[in-house]
Length: 405
Image 1 (cartoon, rainbow, N blue to C red):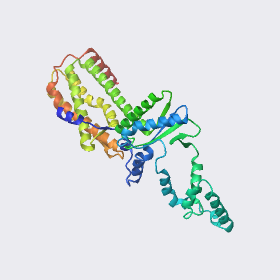
Image 2 (image 1 turned 30 degrees about the horizontal axis):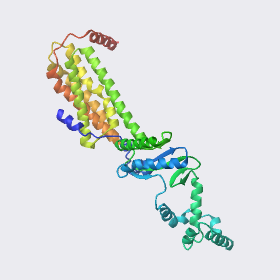
Image 3 (image 1 turned 30 degrees about the vertical axis):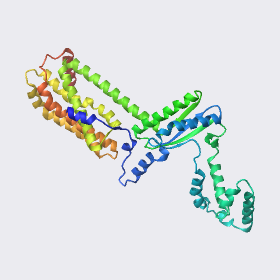
Image 4 (image 1 turned 45 degrees about the horizontal axis):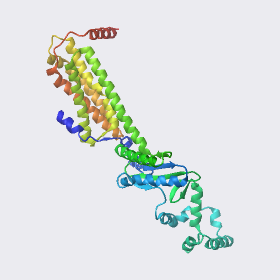
């Protein structure tokens, strides 16, 4: 068991991906769409706003923030953008110009507008713009776009998108406010909890570097990575809290009822065997274990300890029988109850959620291992029976009276 535990927990990878709780549809289309959304560039986008005394100072802070993240450009971030990148105009042109007519509504008005007056108006507009400040661009596209559909499309895109952002000294700023904006795109899915922790740590370090430059600046970071990190931390706190409370309650109950450290040690061994078996099964089948599986598995401590408590209780009350004899008489009922419980959890293996399948495997292996450890490890090490404690006798008397009613 010790070797199995060493292998199970050595380099154990605890995941927190939400993909594990995305249902797997039979046709695969719905699940593929959900998984694509969970790992899309939109979901990986991080928006950082930096507010300072003036737009110029805010842009300088945005550049400092981006430079602080530059060492992580090849590992954590695939885009770090505090202002328009070189070649942006060409990318916009390549994207929209070949598709410009797709944005023209095919209405009756648009079709009937191609008359002599409309053509004359378009020619006059072309002549006017060729004499304006945008003449270099107009002269370049006019042979392929004489009706100037592309400039009109750009104007519509700008008007529809509003004027929330503008470029100031090479950086993005909020119109009319001394607030700069930095756009980031993570390399890994935000629902990969390990990646979310690393990304959040890098963002926090960059934030602290900027605050050293301007302590009065206000920096806000919006991303899904923060939610994933918080969820991971919450799961770890839940695991610690549930495990601690369960362990304290089990220790107190065993000491109060049985007054035996050896009985308590036997309970700890069976629980340890169950946890190790669950982790080993998940690592062998899934390669890792989800944080939620560990949290829910910690709540199964009470199920595993029931086998030992039931056996130790009989040994304390039947002092005239050997531990092996008592186990022989208890085993049919104990095994039936344990395996029905284990099989009940195993039914989740047919769930459409991968996370629930993992929980089913962990629960089945954990309960089965605890049951077998109780059967084969407890009898040889069962302590000499003592007179039942006062609280033990009173509890049994009360329960017996209640059962008779």
